[in-house]
Length: 100
Image (cartoon, rainbow, N blue to C red; front, side, top):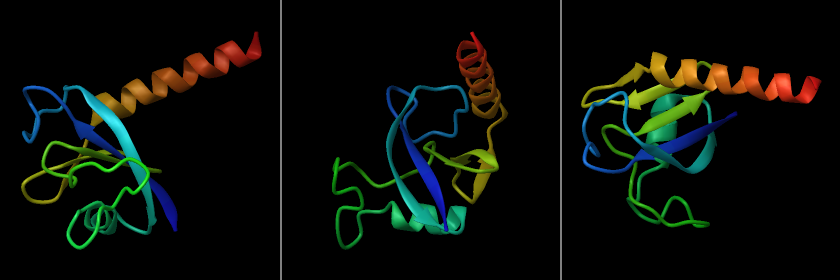
């Protein structure tokens, strides 16, 4: 089991397969695959995020796992180089500040 972070898109590009758009971290689930993370982040029978109730994860939203950031598409998932690159840059900056 691994932690999968869920980011929902906000703004005019919500619910569209647009890579470079604003997203906010909504919550996380523990599971073993992207497909299960998507399934667990749906409000089918109950609200999936009881700490901060929100909508179901949809097209254009992003799921982060150990491999990188994946956008939910109309069919499947797509690895987002832009978010993975930004995360790598942030990690490098954090490591630099810890070394000082």
